[in-house]
Length: 270
Image (cartoon, rainbow, N blue to C red):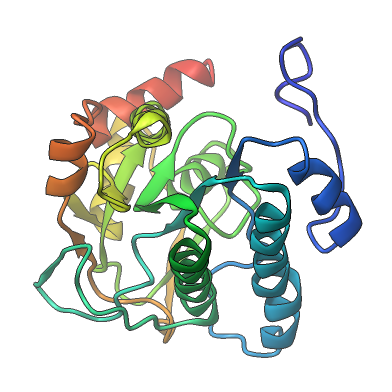
């Protein structure tokens, strides 16, 4: 579904990121590139590694080459706040922390970040990288394997059982979509010297706590909760430092997890 169908100021072109001719044509008339594309999710599966390189990393490098050819000097890249740093225990990761991605998805993001930095050094491309925690909000595809809050809510409302990796003690940070888009807008217009930003709410909850909050909000218990072994791609906790985003972007999220779940509930008409 095209969410911009009724916006006369937006032109939607459906295409393939691996179509170099199309990318070149679009970049030729573009002043600012916003790179949100990824065809993969965090997973233990390595069978798609070569597809991931072909579908994500190689086209991203071609995109940068096209920007150089056409003199397009600005790019905003959506990276990952959860998979880049690996297992770091209770350490709060700053944007200078060593990257140690624990899955192909994280390696993909780190590699594209590195190429963007390289092209910036060689061709003076002005770039911003946003490493995002776990966003949630209305409009997310409830049938995807990424985005646990809408997935859980959908399964609760349809009386489906849920399956949790590990014992549910993994801690994550969740950011409501309106807070995220506000941060992205500020990063887009930012003209300072910082290049990498963490975007998240700054409070951490276990999967078990999220389940409890959803059950409390909807006044209903999940039909069945089962547990399977934790995946190797999942870290136990991922803590991020948001001081650069708050200081440089003058940005601070305002929607708590409880308020966000209630807003989702209202928007769904439940």
